[in-house]
Image (cartoon, rainbow, N blue to C red; front, side, top):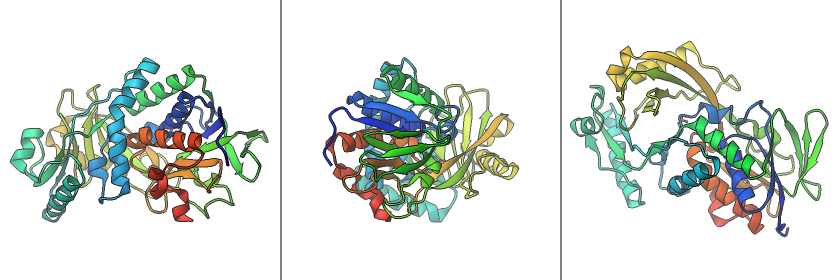
Length: 375
Ligand code: GLY
């Protein structure tokens, strides 16, 4: 199918990824609308996110997923600066670095091997560091920490501020954002994709991009790429207030991670639970996170407990995002299932999906993430 000069695009879902895609499309001259089922933008996985840009620590192999994370991490500073200019809002980007630490000798050996293959693939990571070396980077680490790796270019942003900045940037550029608007079905057989909304309304567009996170699976068109599923995986988080700066870098341990926001709050995350759409924190989950946090940094034991929350990470059948057309030449694209890395991957997703729309076919970089791989 030929590309359309000034295409009309509808994005389903106003989380960070959907908003970023809308922003990239409107910048290139598309007419863009966003349909969000919730009352506010970014209130699901995006609101729950710690906001980590931690592709090095999250990668599990020298594979296209690691390359996608690296590409997006490289885009982040310029993307954030442009977004901040456009929106007038500061997203609190902090490139603090991250230490991945472990209390297990077996994991320490794995980390040593990981450092070697990651350095071979251009990832900025230290060799394996021992406890005294790690203590120089993060004074006050718990005595159970044996060894770890330092990723000096990882960092974090404030996910709520990011959503606000994206909403402001999209709105300023004329993107129409409709909240409380649920899409219940997508018909791709029409000459233009047609959306059925709850309440009986129907909409058409030249292109539809599905960025509905854990709610994407139900929207997969029946004739497209087999039966794609997107499963919710709950992540619980807690916020602690130690009353002073204690974490110069992100600390990512065997049972959780810690990072300190500009406000001084330390965020401790996160559980991984397959409990359907139960998006609330539990006593057991909060207890585990607090225990892991104090184990990583004992001085946190006297912190004020601020609050706890949870969100649902969207997980595809193989854990990689679903990016690109549901069928060759089609006009329905997926930009979803970013699982643990939606914030990190937002810039590269936006860039590649906008190219896919304007170039009329998916760029080769999307190949490994094509929905067709799971058909
Ligand atoms: N990106 C961290 C998490 O999903 O918990």
